[in-house]
Length: 109
Image (tube, one colour):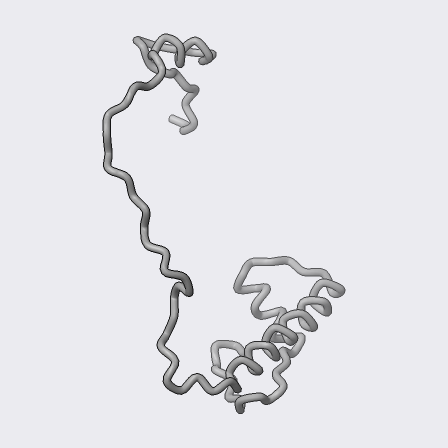
């Protein structure tokens, strides 16, 4: 791998080397034990084999699909409506100040 695209043929069995897994883990800033590297090598290689099998499928004439159902955004109109009274909301706060929530600072000065 190492930034180089690995050429392969459709349906060809693909597998990652141990070095590939270590490189990917390094890029993802993951610390993997030797047993985790071995497990990931097997699991990622199986994923690549499934992808390779999918690449062998003839999709000639099939339109690209991002959504398989006819769902559309179901949005409602914005409307003012009743909400809780400020006093009721602030009653549950540990700290308030001038009718607002007061929180401890999270930034150092």
